[in-house]
Image (cartoon, rainbow, N blue to C red; front, top):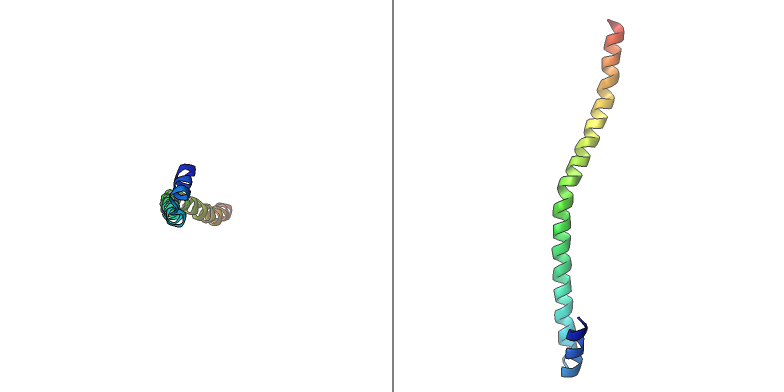
Length: 71
């Protein structure tokens, strides 16, 4: 990056170079965000499934204990 900025300064086209550089960094950031969200989506799905399963087990377990106590 330092070389790109110094080249832009010496050629007198620093605004153009900085615009291209900012566009490149924006594209890299968007790509990284897409990749991260693609990786996080299945992990969050599993975590939510485990939470729902835990709630379901916590409701069903006392019902089974009650049915055993009745018989």
